[in-house]
Each structure stands twice: as C-alpha cells, then as structure tokens.
Length: 314
Image 1: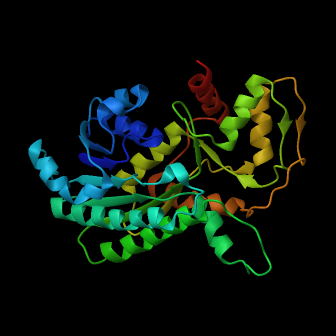
Image 2: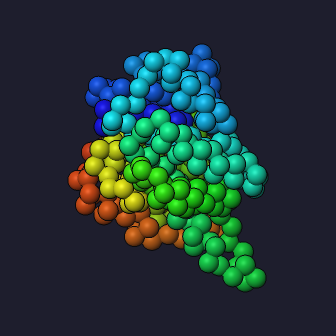
C-alpha cells in the first residue's frame, strides 16, 4: 500500500487511522462531509498531513473529478477504506430509509474506487451485527428481546453482501472488517463504559445489570493497528474481527475501571434488567486476523481507560 483514500475521516476512529497512515509516509486522501473548519480541532490536527476533500457520500461518484482538481493519481497500490456511514446520530430511531441509503452509497464507493484504479476496497461493519444475526433467529411471537441498533446493523449486513456480490464481478480485492468496542482519547460518544467512567468520577450512584454478558474492548491504537495490517496483509474475500483476543464479562470491565477511579460508592450489580441478546466469546474471535496478519494488541484496557479519562476531564 502506497496510497489510501479514507471516507469518514473526521470521526473518532477515522481521524486516528488517517494519522497512522500518514505517519508511515502513505499518501492519503481523507474524505469528510464537513468542511475542515467544522471538524473538531483535535481531529483536524490528525488530518494535517493528508489531502482533505469535503465530500458528502451522496456525491461519492464525483470523487474522480475532485481528485483531478488536486492532481492526485491513485497509482498502482491504493486502498479505498470505507468508514463513512450516514445517520449514525440516530441509531435507535428505526429510520429504515436513512440507514438503507448507505447501502447504495457504499456500492457507489466501490464502483468509484474501481473506476479510479484502486486495488483494494475495505468496508467497515459494526459489532452490532453479532447481536443482529442472533436477533433475527428469534421467534418474535415468543421472544421480545430487542436490539436497539438492529436497523443500523441490518443495513450494514446488506451492504456487506451487496459489496461482496459486486466486487466479485470487478477487478478489485474486497475485505470486510468488524471491531469490538473502541476506547481511547477523543471519543465523544456516550457509550456505556464512558458513562460509567463519568459516574465514577462524579460520585454518582452505581447501579448496573448483572454484567454477566460477554463484551470486548480494544484501544483506539489497537483498532488502527488492525486496520493497517488488514490493508497491507489481509486476504481478499475474508472477513476480519479486530478485538482484544480476550473478551470478558462486562462486569469485569466495570470493576477494572473502578480500581483505577474508585468513587467511594458501592457498585450494585443485578439491580437493573438485561433483556438484550447474549453473545459468546467466539463471537469476538480474532483468530482469522491473527492467522493472516500476525495482529497482536499492544495496549491494555487500563491504558485505554486512562486515555479516555484525559479526553473527558482534562
């Protein structure tokens, strides 16, 4: 890989990924729907070594002309890495149209990547897919479990399969990537663990479900490492999960966080219900990624928590 095009480059993961590429001397075009002036300063600084193009995914078929405007040629070893996904500020609103339009934009991205001469296309999915496959197997006349992100992840699954079918007829490598929950600096989403850390620091009441459900967390740095290895060593047609390789009960993650930032309040597990799908450790398996790329996570959960703390409270 000598060059890369990255969509969704202004996001938490996208900006860090772009910086990791440019730090290695890779020539990167970063795409985002916001103007640079609108991008969060900490993320904008990670994009300084890349060529930034303000381009909404609705306009992705005009990418070739935008590249011509800046005289940028893809060369012979360019990876198109598709992180962009619209509508993610309202994952739980069941807006099927908003989610499904992303499928078309993803396919348009694949076709555009072929037209401009990219050699590899990488599509990023979501860990919610693991819940959704199990959710769709339920007898909904007897089960009322509800995965609040099911429409979002169903759209991701549709995109994955549509891209695989399309890529098989085009001269381009295609790889699908999923990852565990990512934690680190500059994360501004209200995830369960982020909210829990805020409760510890603020001295709020600590009331949880049993926490027995299996979960997995990786640092932002390890997620980006996995992305890099997949671009360089991943095998076309494969699906890779980027994770820690050591999934645990959610309760253990909470307890380890508490040891770093004890609040003095008692943690009360089992006080809230948990009615969602339960995953297994196998659902978070990184065996395929390790086999093909020799991926090895380098940062501990505790280090990632400390980086998140610095973002939230410094």
